[in-house]
Image (cartoon, rainbow, N blue to C red; front, side, top):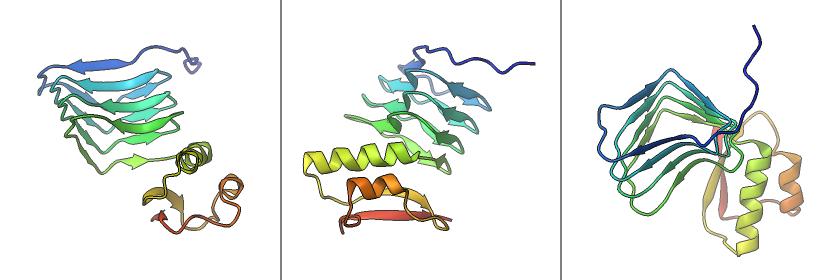
Length: 150
């Protein structure tokens, strides 16, 4: 049996009160924005894979999704984006960032002149990705903190 081929599609939108809506044990891939939560939506997303989308999850406009126990990785721009008024519960997820994502994020911060504390996850047994040294050849700025994934 062949694996599905990548086909771009819009994504899934939750809008309005929907507290009984559940996405569980699914894979969401190749979407522009895999999951959008808006308009006070409150669905539960658990034990799923959200990967290889432009944006994994976007939440705004008083939405309160419960995002628990998922694998969120390899999304081109962001794994999770939160805007305006939002109240998500985000816990026990594995959120992976590719080297490209980390470099793009650090480059954007540097270009905007932002030197506030931010963080990203690295494997404690590997050195920082070489591309990060291209962005910061003298090492990471002191206010950027690298968290270690155990």
